[in-house]
Length: 253
Ligand code: G3P
Ligand code: CA
Image (cartoon, protein in one colour):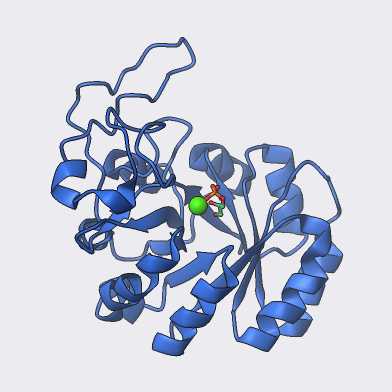
């Protein structure tokens, strides 16, 4: 089975990295949700992609320079634009969530992929996940482009699964070697538009004992090709499209 991971939730339809976006991803049949974390000046884990607030909220400035209390005043639905150019979530009281808030919400049976966007966030992330239900269910992975961040995760908690983000897809073998040497279970290449047959890469990953998951895949034909090729999973902005392409989630037994 190839896992469908909702990229920043169901970010094609709702403001990325917000609880409504994560909720919709689950409603649409995602197996897991992906989110990004930064550390605030008062040591809280803000679920936000950019190091600054302006692209996704009504506020400006650096996440690392202000408190979570201040960030909570920002409208996290302010900038999301619908296809017709309107802003349907503006003024609807959407907030930037914290990682503990997402952990408290996450339904049983749904996985979590936490992307560390700032090295300063590593220690708090490992601590937040330590006693979480998703960790107990062995359904969480911590991923990063930053090799030092991943090494630090493994130093703090060697049992916590990690995933190495790399670009692009045709460098997978290098990523598999690196991940194996450093103990990272997952390898997440950027899918790009290379259109490469994934089968040999999936076979290589299996030979290395690693999980291969591409990001970001929104085309249903490509999703089918990746699933047929034996990929462990893929990250998508459109979990509904993915679920329609791959068929229903198997029922939990
Ligand atoms: O899931 C990996 C993907 O999210 C990495 O890219 O920029 O969306 O965080 P980005
Ligand atoms: Ca991400």
